[in-house]
Length: 82
Image 1 (tube, rainbow, N blue to C red):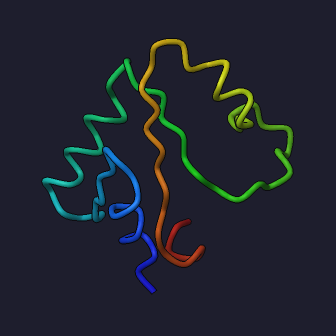
Image 2: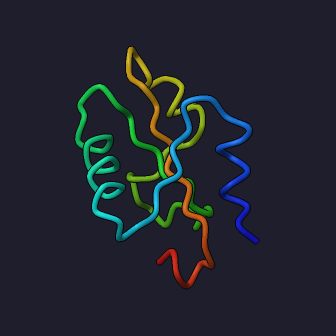
């Protein structure tokens, strides 16, 4: 349904990147490895399963400090996203 394309129309500072395109992979790599960024991946809740790698929205808000938030939203089927 290409719902990811709607984000580019609705949000400022939104980048639509496609996995496998070298230029897009480079942009995402730079965003992820920038220490000024807090990278958050939108993923369905798995009940935390005891993992400390999951953050709630409140955790993200308190972690922000002066960081930019990079929200990674995977647009595809869950099978493809895994």
